[in-house]
Amino acid sequence: MLFPGNSTYERHMQNVKNDMTERAREWGADLIGVADTQRLAGIGTRPADLLDGWPRAVCVAVRLADGIVDQVTHGPTALYSQHYIRVNAVLDDIATRLAAWLQSRGGSALPLPASQILCEETFVSYLSHKAVGIAAGLGWQGKSLLLVTPEHGPRVRLVTVLTDLKIPPDKPLRNRCGTCTACTDACPAGAIRGVGTDSHFATRREAVDLDACVAQLRRFSEEAHIAPYLCGVCVSSCPWGKRKKG
Ligand code: SF4
Ligand code: SF4
Image 1 (tube, protein in one colour):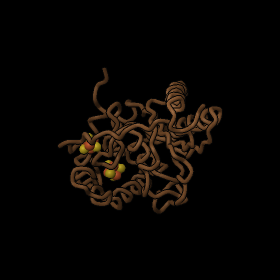
Image 2: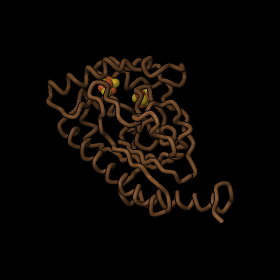
Image 3: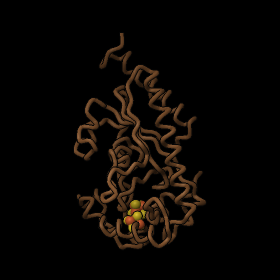
């Protein structure tokens, strides 16, 4: 018999997780993790009750191309803008497939868009994929407020699928920014204060001057005719993304 709490159910859900991971990788995912949505309490969602009835949030990451990100030294490039849009489309495609697959395994699913801005003033969306990624153990929140993964640093884009299948959740990772100041030094707006949000218990606003960051994004958009609003310098400068693999 399958019911929550019994060992057969737990094994079944672990098998679902293993199969889901394999499928997602076939569809183009580089990283995948599962968050218990209890860890997301208080993150702020649109609508406010978005997570109600969804015990798990699956977070998928697709890696950005190093050849493109490496060129983002002082501001966004046209290549980066196009790549950003295309990777978001890949993520939306994976999320759509993943939702259908979860439903084929007896669950319900709600795929959220990779990058749909609901308010042009505040840049808010349905929820923070980054918060889901952190809760799902894909990486930690860097001093830049980006999700930093051990595998690819912040050179990833993210998407989320909510599900009612109680797939075994992953555990968050410890912060590994240490004494690094690369993103603080590189930020063209001087917006990253270098305090992080872990060691000093600083809030997001204390860690990064978000108004200065948004103003810089608007300047790039006006001066270089880059759309959507982009920068990418903190993505490019993080040593965790530059590490040579294998
Ligand atoms: S996106 Fe650009 S302006 Fe904003 S914090 Fe990162 S480097 Fe600074
Ligand atoms: S550049 Fe350094 S301080 Fe900034 S997020 Fe990456 S590891 Fe952390």
